[in-house]
Length: 233
Length: 233
DNA sequence: TTTTAAATGATAGCAATACTATCATAAATA
DNA sequence: TATTTATGATAGTATTGCTATCATTTAAAA
Image 1 (cartoon, rainbow over the protein chains, first blue to last red):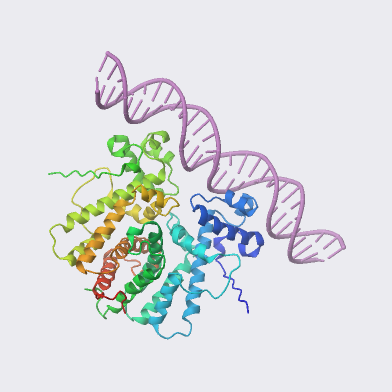
Image 2 (cartoon, rainbow over the protein chains, first blue to last red; image 1 turned 180 degrees about the vertical axis):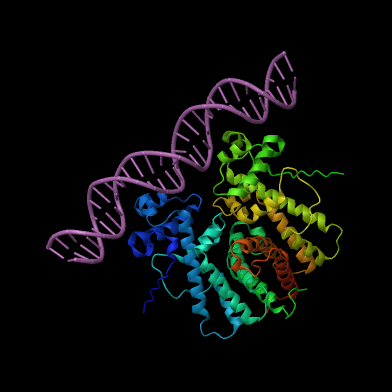
């Protein structure tokens, strides 16, 4: 059986649905490739048009601007990651085990059970690490947020928060711990490769030490919480 | 006594030292103001020139481009924050108390003992929260890092790491915890204001719940560590 | 199969951005 | 007073970030 998954994206993200045509899928595929190669700042629709073998105008028929395309692909990633979480934690009873799966997913150590022909997920992960924050670090966050553009990120965060609460009912910071863990996973990977002195894993190739760090961070935060007491120490 | 502090900046950050002239200081002052008002993406040297009452060309005599100006001001902030840390923890014996001061500083709850006439530190803090990450999330990080542009950030992180180690010798992730805490302080403040569902402090004005969260995160991570055992749980 | 609609290509154009260069003048320093 | 240094004024250029028009190809509906 070959499993073909289609992630339904928020229509507010695009002008014309890129999944509906060959050209649209090429724009996504080469867009991911190109943003990864030259970085979001140097990336332009003109360059992308050349790569895809189409015109600038045609790309604008799919995406309002390059920022929307970035939000599209990062959002795609969040949706995919939430699906991974649901899939991998299915039938698992122990919340502690679920947390371990979350850590594996965030550090990209879990096997993916389905293939998406035109999307290179490792490259996509790199983009989310290096450029992902830029999708919401803008003056139009509030507007974008109202258009529900960040819902997949919030859904993922909420789902993680629920697992934390399942493990430790009454824990007062499940969402903040959730977003912190997601962000930290990315930042620490970025720092490891580019600013290693900000981490303790400089020079290490494996993402295991990062997983250990996240593991320690999460479980110590949850385990040390005693009901009726928000502060540690 | 009026204390006038001059932060010596890495000359690689500028073409001509903006602290050396009136115009330079105006560029910094209005630059901070303007980046805060319209956001880094929409900010241009032409607009800044208009605001300052000078020409585009003159601004280019001080900074290579707007990205360098951003790095200049965020770096200034890190240097200032490290100084604050040194000042506020001076003569304090207990590492636990030092950690509490770090939390206060990161959540901007500590009083500043000196004035810098042309720099609005609250606005600067907002910029570091909203735009700061963009100074190193580029394709030229490695180059910039070699030019030591991020040294102040790394110094601050290292100093925090030292306090963590002082509190808990042998703790295996002092730098990662340091950078995580710095980043988390900023992200959670940003989320609180713009994407509140990613936090547990939505609607709360005070930064006290964030301070509580950071407090819990740090102390649980440090306290739960037992020698010879890297993992929690 | 025809007709009609939808998607793409080709081309043009325009205001703004991100610079670089030149020269004159004003201000500070030797 | 001579001379360096800083700024202002102005111009120019390639690229970016779009929008618009019209012809053509492709796909869907009649």
